Length: 466
Image (cartoon, rainbow, N blue to C red; front, side, top):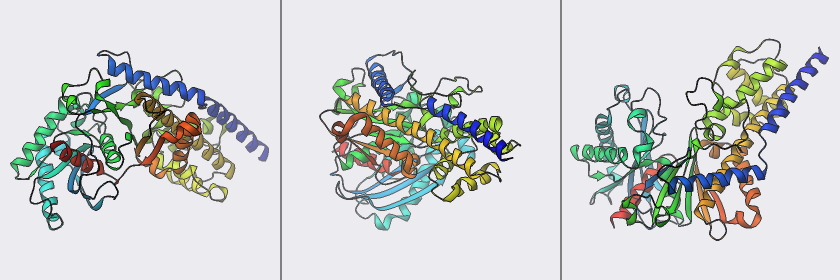
């Protein structure tokens, strides 16, 4: 029995070593990824018909906040099936947000299910906002004498909303910067006026642009923001004169915020394996969103599950009988991967508990649990280092790397809660840039927490009107 078990572990480790080799991200490969990222962004901005998979949007054309804005601001962060109303006081760039209040509201299912749901949804949000403002009016005395400022962000990718949502069809992100975003802002403002709410919005953008606004409020060197959660994208500041195809409206600001849907990025230099979800047979476009499927929280757990399934099938890692739940796609989530990866207990007890909880694996051995932890490490390291390479590529595109500091704001559970993932990301940037250049790239967590980006956009509106 002991000899048989040993042979199983040797086979599992052969699978592990091959997987690790395929996932390797040496600095030279990462530089190829970074250079291609910068080149594709440039090609997309410079051409009306670029040969690139990247979606690059002129996402925000008004000035970003300066840090001088003070007072009470409101925001709405619209998600797939709910929205968050936020209120906060800005005290200036040297002070954190204060008097922060948040209220999450579920969107009625009959509104979600409709494709043409914009007016009904805006009416519903306006009524809920009126209740929120009324409840908090006692602490809002300095805003009652003037029109309150309202920012509006979308926290889900507009073409990746839940399948049950009509919004997935209505609000395609490829249109939001020019057509749908303006229509949605107009609908919101009409609903606010209809219900007697003294607020208005002037732009609807995704939440990553809000994170960038938050970073800029605290530092004028904040030029990039990354959303690193279930999905992923990046926004950065570009000089308007360097974007020949930018809309005419961008002339009112020296800067334009560019939103890069880098999830669609693909390259021959990406370290791909047979376990990665970009090869899904059920996908109508197997090559789509390749980068996102290697780095975002939606897919990391699924990659780990596929490797463990291979080990269970070919090396009987968890015993002679294949655990049925191990064959269920997307049952393992990124928080579970983080918990198993960061397990410092004796004999990997947390790993054992997760295997039992998620896959009904009750008889895992310490050696099997150690292998599970190593699989998590390989997947997380590859993902984090690819994020680092993408960030370096975008900073390179801005032309700031050698002579100016660039503050990178990151929001999302992968960065906030997954310590080892975060450490791999930081170490990758340092490795690529070296001790001298890496001092010019400062990575920090976003300001204010969930939904706060909409508040900072309200401050942008105040700045713009002045």
